[in-house]
Image (tube, one colour):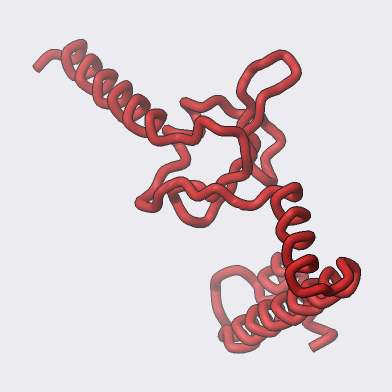
Length: 153
């Protein structure tokens, strides 16, 4: 097989992968959990009508092909709630329960705060259990990545 034939095979493989992954990518704008199961993307149409695909923490705007090709995994795309959906759900729950909306929002905020505190405690536990003499990332640097000040523990 010649070098040109080998390159042609790779090009075909890559084009097929792009087509396959693009076919399963969302077509309705929204916020989605990506197939890797860990990343999210905000898909919307810009004022000029072009598709925009934004990945949190990344300042670049992507295209359907680049997101579908490089952001892949075994899970299906999962549409997440938008703020409009969340507001509508809160309004429906408050109406169904006869609870004032501000009371329901306070209850939901308390639940979220408790979940955040539990997650922070789990991160702190993992950091504390890490061997101090590890040759990997220094403990203080690792804790800092999670927003934890070791002096406060």
